[in-house]
Image (cartoon, rainbow, N blue to C red; front, side, top):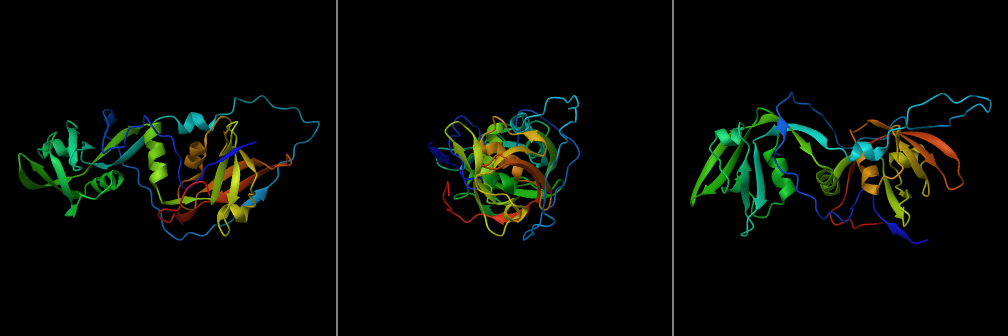
Length: 281
């Protein structure tokens, strides 16, 4: 059987038809900000392996249908952050141009308009900046200022804008793009492979990382992640579920190549991918 190698923490191809995740979307409401903190250099702690034993004469209890991983990962995700309220696109010249301004947000109050070009963020030139970096720099803490240097009608000016909390809905395509771009995250330390029937299995367990310490092995198939059934899920859905907050545990149900099932609890550790690391290793 031909197997197609796909790296869990490196890249996933085939993203045609997906829109870029910008500073804002057409749908969103102001709400309280949710803060999350991470720290580099975390060690895997208290990883454990447990085995579930079921009595042969036990009568199965009535259970609700198990929620699938794809029902969660492919649903639109609510994101809250400090934003200014602009949507951007690349102009023919390569510059970042404001495509539209969200009514009622700080950018509109500051006088920014569609067609304005943003040439610097906090005095950092945007000429060679990629779009994801641009977005990350414009977003920030609620109540914090950001200075955008804009050009309109051939006149350059600095505009100081105070970020406001904004909730927006991020599509599945946008989530996929963000996961692929991220090179600094908390995960378990595996790469996944997908066979030509669509099944996903562990291709490699990386030495010294939490998955190895917990006993996950190459060839294992993950049947559930935190109680979510993985049937029908693609590699990127696994990626979304396996990554998370630094130090937070993730529970896996796995079946090895001999059909033995076991349960693993793994604490996520900090990881940084090298630039140009390649795909499918």
